[in-house]
Length: 45
Ligand SMILES: [Zn+2]
Image (tube, rainbow, N blue to C red; front, side, top):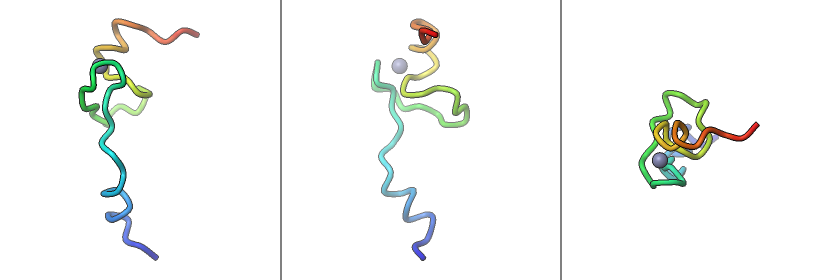
């Protein structure tokens, strides 16, 4: 088995698709946009 840390290190940093800002993954409710862009452009239901 590979160490879990190595797996996460290979993952690219999560960035906003709107402004390219790095997203804090503390709130995983955001998909690919930071809270600022999400607030400006709420997801269409
Ligand atoms: Zn953004």
